[in-house]
Image (cartoon, rainbow, N blue to C red; front, side, top):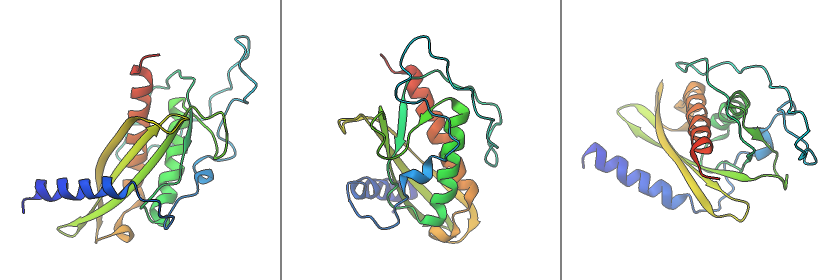
Length: 193
């Protein structure tokens, strides 16, 4: 079987598995929002309200550009538990998602916050090829009613040698977080309404 065909088959499998509701290796969504992540209180809806001051810029992931533009959006994004990623890989992902969203001007809200306007549902899997591990990821962006309105997907290969989650280095997960938030920001700016 050719490598592209293998990747296509495995990605299809990942999409099928994304519908599963297993709670094994699930990242608690509250880990995606730190206590110091700036969020607007739900009652700040008047036009005269002053916006919160931006947080300091986050440190870039290895190989990532340092200057990214913040966007203007009223979206309030909540990250649901991540399915499929091992906890040791989820920790740098969660930290970087929070930092990058802050850097890009995207407000994150904690689990259970009813003011969320979008929910990000992430599904992860790994495949081994020639002594390296590739992480395949899919993020479904859903509205409060649970309808998928956008999808972000991709893959990243870990620089570390080995197979499986234990060989996925933090820089790989940070890179995925950066790409995820950057694609979300681009979509938020481009979407109608």
